[in-house]
Image (cartoon, rainbow, N blue to C red):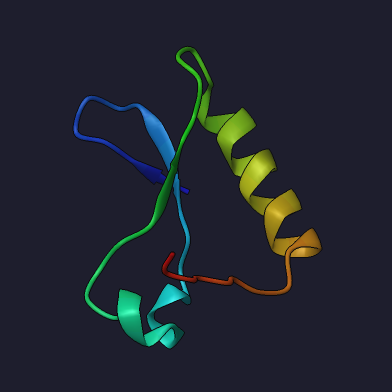
Length: 59
């Protein structure tokens, strides 16, 4: 979980650098307006517990 300069939380998808096409990029999840830091932390922990990887494919 990260915070924008204005304090708005967002979730960085760390580990994405293992996907070569994304090695120099940052992937993030924008949360709905009004999401609290505590809610963002809970969401990030749940994603960490439930998501095992990231897939990227060009079309």
